[in-house]
Length: 411
Ligand code: ZN
Picture 1 (tube, rainbow, N blue to C red):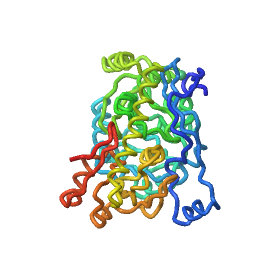
Picture 2: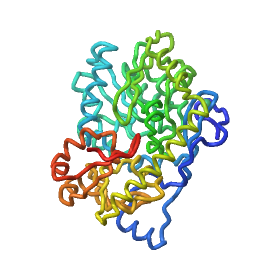
Picture 3: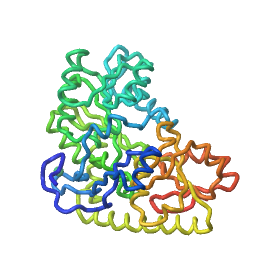
Picture 4: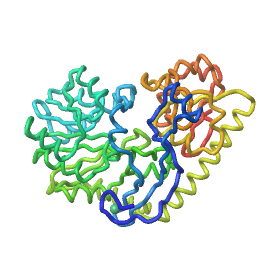
């Protein structure tokens, strides 16, 4: 394939996870019956990880048409307590960097249900969300957060600028990695951002992905695995500069980058980040061959552990039905049959079945009702929150299995 950022040929993949169904394509009971009877085929698309040795971008080859990804997208920010606290920090950071935001326009790209923009509105900003998923955009609009239902890019940025003027602050959390046209995205930011404006970009960071072997976060919607080096080149090509970076322990280790129009002086954090990426060899093939080897060991060990814990005949459960949980389950050669069901707080997933593995998704209360002896923590990025909420299940002897960075039972 050719690199999404710089166009260079990437050569052979560094990791292959096999052909997997799209990680968010949950099935209804009727669809599961049709698939299992052979009357309906679940789409399966190869999941291959590539490294661009030219600019350092780690990425996947295949992509799905964006309409299939977003038209009925079922991730809701507001279903997690952690996200509410984080949204407050994002607004604090914008204010610390750019002063009072009262009366200024704040635009969020992929604003989801408006959880983040609400913080800015409460501080007196004019807010506008741009969100392609009509169902979640409606939730935001009903909650008083004006939201346009469209994909963000150059054309969308121009329309927003004509109607509302330039934005003092722009926010994009966990979206750039999903964008098939990153240059259109960066150009859109350049078109809409005020000269003294601030763009806050949050994305999963490549270092924890690498060092904790977070291979489950590889799925078709997640096109790029971002580090500072390729990002800096992408923004430079559009007259923007990476000026600061704050690591956050969210979604398995994320970075909140500050981007400003070119000419702004970068903070020492940027040079430090680039140096660290070089020292770790994150742009080198041999590094990712090591990652692939570790991924193989984790997959084998987790399959073995689930199989042995389920061998007494007791069925296990899984906590969370995130997209990454589906990559993890679809990557196992054994052990999945030990699981009876998953639980998830998102009401949209409850009553549906996981793609590929067809496990029913139930509300979290099902854990205390069924009291399975072990529960695989698929939403491992919410470990602290889940353990606290499931105190009763744990007091009655239930144990969680942490799959990564190495599969183990949490004491
Ligand atoms: Zn490249």
